[in-house]
Image (cartoon, rainbow, N blue to C red):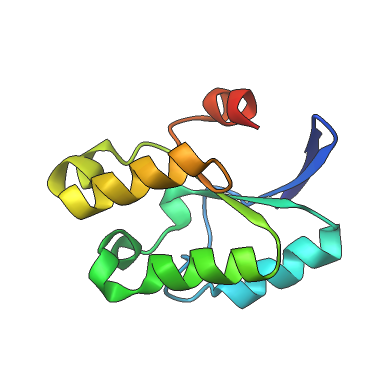
Length: 117
């Protein structure tokens, strides 16, 4: 993981490879790392997201986002999820509303993330 700064905010950026959020990596683990790094924003690459996360009925996404908000941390899902969004209207709506609100973000690449933060 890397600790970076952008516009006065500290970001905890997970590597491309490793345990998947929603499977063997749990939101509590990420929160512990974020608190340890004093990071307000946690950036998780799509490659580190359990596929069931994008199936909203699984409840994984809701649990993760709720826990991040509860502990006043922002979550950025970094990478291309166009196929998943195109395959599910409910996911499309969830991503749209999440990005509209702007607290948590789904972004296709690092440049888009930095522009939104």
